[in-house]
Structures are given as structure tokens and as C-alpha cells.
Amino acid sequence: MTSDPESEPLLTPANSALVFICPQAKFASSLNSAERTELFNHLLEIATEAQSLSIPVLSFVESTMADRNALDSRLRDVIDDQAVHFSSAAHPWRDEAFVEKLNEFGRRRLIVGGLTTEGPVSFAVLSALADGFAVYVLTDGCAGVSASDHEIALARMAQAGAVLVSTAGVRHEWGAAGKGDAVT
Image 1 (spheres, rainbow, N blue to C red):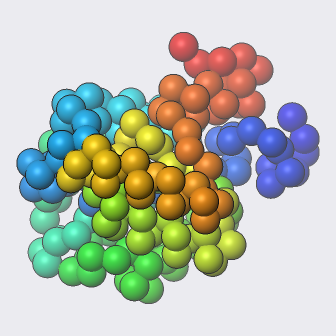
Image 2: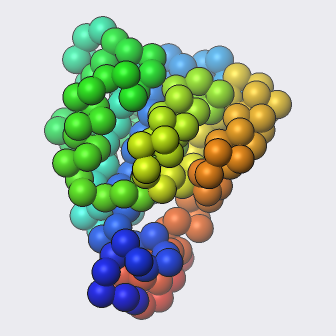
């Protein structure tokens, strides 16, 4: 591992932040590109790992009220209150306070998952790329209204420069870089 986290080729606990976009049950009911339980299990798994490694986490929750119940119930126990940003905006990057919180992390590598791939997730990823972030999209940690919408959105984000990753792959990189071996 290099001494500069930003020059390290792997995602590490020192160079990455985890960002969830709209991980809300109310959006999950319209998904057809992934099985809901599996999707939220992936988000829970990576959030738990991030917490154990002290990796910053920020969750954008589209809600007109700061109601913690808007966050999917499986994630409430893992993501603390300070890591949840409530907004009435459907486009995370149009909420200046959200972008400011991300910048406060001081990490230029964002690992992104959430709902929906073709909506708020794509909006956030494309905007983050335009702002100079390196963005890694959790292909098994986001979902779309249809399988084709999900795949087309992933292709568009990849073409714009996002790196497509899996939860297991990110966990292995964090483990290899942080502990000298892979997380199982």
C-alpha cells in the first residue's frame, strides 16, 4: 500500500466514502430489476463493513420530513442519524448541503448504491463525476424499475467514467488494503 491514499490503486478505508441514494422502502416497491431483500442485504452488508472500518457513510433520503422511518428499516440500526441527509430534492446534487457534507469527508472516491439506478442514483453519479470525484457504482446495491432501465443506466454511468463494482468486490478491496488480506 502506498503512503498516499489517493494514489493507492485499491479502494481503501482511507480513500473512500460510501453514499446511499434514496435507500427507502417506498421506492423499492416499484423495482423489478432486483429482488428487494437481496438488494437491501447488499446495502446492509456494505454499510456494516464501512462502519466497522470507520469509512464515512452518507445516505441521501428524499423526504419532505426528517423522518428516520423513511430510511429502510434494515439500514436504520447501522447508519447513524448524522449520516442521513433528508431532502425534498429528487436530484442529490441539487441539494448544496448534501454535496457540502460529501466534500467534508475529504475523500474523492465515492462508492454509490441506492434507488433507482435510472433516476437519483444516475443523477448523483453523473454529477459527482462532473465534479471530479472517482465514482464506483454498486451494481448489486442499486436497482431500477425494470432490468433494462437498470442495465442502460449502468452502461451510461460506466461510459461517463464510473467504475462498476459489486459489494463483495469492494469488501475484498477494503480488506486487502486495510488488513493485508481479503474480507470473506
